[in-house]
Amino acid sequence: MSARDMLSLVLPCRNQADHIGAVLPLYLSPLQGARGRRSSWVVVPNASSDGTEQVVAEIARRDPRVRLVCNPDGGWGLSVRTGLDAATRRNPGLHEHGAH
Image (cartoon, rainbow, N blue to C red):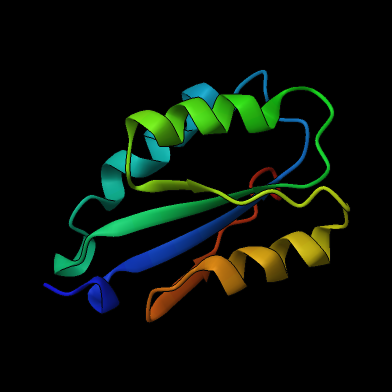
């Protein structure tokens, strides 16, 4: 299976250090092999000031399915766009954490 067959999901977030370390692995598990594809997550902290980047960086260091792409300038829309631009796979998707 080529890298182009992978599904990349974008997760913009802001100040989620207190729980993203527990939540992100829960997102990764069900998508393993979804529809016969490997998945990856592009996590984009949106000008976080609470250490979210460090938590995600540690997860990304241990799990190659996670990519950290920072948006130091802030702005939800810019974080979404930054994540979609960084999603190099043919099938990008967006997950709005906390939107429900």
